[in-house]
Length: 302
Image 1 (cartoon, rainbow, N blue to C red):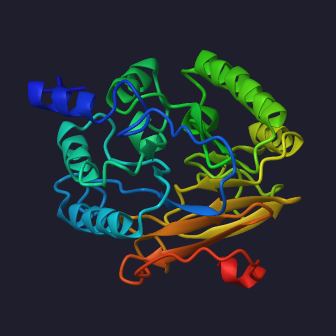
Image 2: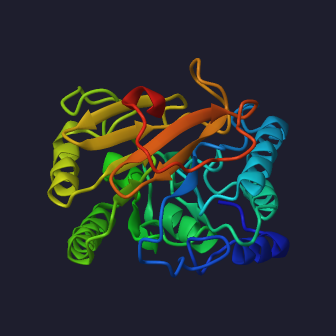
């Protein structure tokens, strides 16, 4: 990987090399204080439209997404991986951070590592770069009486060169979920890049899901520990499924779509007894988000 310039290093430090949130370590609120909402983004993927030759289109789309977030004022924003298109690319990363710093400083921004951030077959060198640039690739935080857990699924998808890292993350994850059970949060939510599955927990292995042999371990772990939902990206379109009561929600991209769903993001509302979520194209984001106590039908989640 090419050596980062002093300016890039400074940007990386400011952007959170010591923390996985852009502006704060973790929200202090750990008690339920009523319904709230957050914004889930995925696949900003600077450089994808033009095959790493430029990123003008990604700049336009991410600036629009950040502008919407500033108006809506969510509890936080999370980006579920593939922030850039070429692992370790200095220019793509600098542009990503330049726009990310336009987010209101009162709104925490949480990064999730994707395969285009750490490589399709990640190495320790890839992971070191990511951690110095974005912060931890597995961690947890609390907000509003809920627990949020972020994991690195690229090392699960292709563990070839980083098996020890997979084991370290697995041990940490088991402990984090066990702690969540003891803490009894209103909801436990997992953020990751790869979907565990797209449509069926028993579906065949593919590029867009976690291999079945390893998938079953995580599904069992999540169900045993009462995970409400898993949010992912990677697919560049929307997909919805369940494993028992646990929702598997795959969201379309802020960047380049690969299907009929437009560039956009998801608004997720958390209530004491359920969650609601809806994906919006960037040209169809509402002016404001209303939180209503009464439940809505399943169809409205879509």
